[in-house]
Amino acid sequence: MLSRVADSIYWMARYVERAENLSRLLLSTQDLLLDAGSDGVDEAQFWQPLLATTGDEEAYFTQHKKIKGKDVTEFLALRADNPNSMLNSIRAARENARTVRDQISDEIWESLNSLRLFVESSEGKTMHRTQSAAYYERVLRGSYEFQGIADSTTPRGEIWHFLRLGTCLERADKMSRLLDTCSSLSLELPPSPQARPLRWAALLRSCSAWHAFQAQCSKLDPTQIIEYLLLDETFPRSIACCVAEAQSALQALCADAGLHGMPLPLRYVGRLRADLAYTTVEEVLAAGLHDYIDDLQLRLNQIGEAIFQTFVQHAELSQLPEEAPVETTTAPGAFHAHAEEDVHLQQQQQQQ
Image (cartoon, rainbow, N blue to C red; front, side):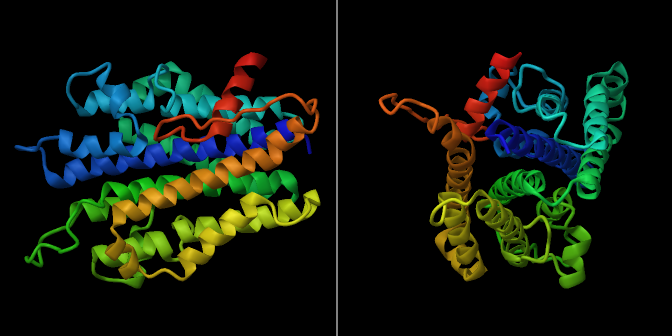
């Protein structure tokens, strides 16, 4: 497989998952506001954590003075000048699909193209203005459709492994950010049995873990929620499960590539999976959830950069003269924290 094809498929999957996660965040935040009630509620305390999760606080405040729900949802969903918006994520996924049109099934292409047409249409913009929940659910269904079609029509070869790799790493990264938004919350539940821990319930709903968690634990215990979303390999959106799937995909890719020794991405993801497997939630909390998540995100970024260097840059370097220096830098930013993403975006701009 050409390195360009692998890169496009990998990022196609990541951008679709990114749009889906943003839809989940917006939906759960709206539900949280409804549960809290509208009287006397400062909506900024609900929308500010969402901006922190996506890393868009600074960009948002360059255009708005205050945090308002309407402005935040528009900024994160529809703004073309926000590179992290849902609109731009879907556009990027579709553009990546276009560059590898001959490598993916017609059904995958049609599903992504239809989703892109919807978010850019006047119908979609009207729906977001009048029925925002329905709009986000439509994006969610589009992501589910993409994943279901990919699962049903993609041979279990290199293309499939890069699809799963992109999806799992993006999902793990966003789950870590979700957990980090709750790191400052008290782990002690309110004394009244009638009190509802709204933020912890919203966390479960934002990753579709509400029913799965309740099947294992009838009480919304924050410690158990953290353990479930971080360390439980049976839940498909937990960080431990995503890392395990990423390791499986990398094992298949590295075996097929015939690389000498153990490549860096496989070594990094193997270490991370082992650490997660032998870590307890008590150890995580003793170290501090925020500090633990910070280290976890750095390690996920390290895996992403190693994937780029091994499967994309490796092919480019092998074609360069020996004296040609090659420099790689990691761009700052919470949502775009990968050097390979910056290079990938530059390549797309050159193609356009």
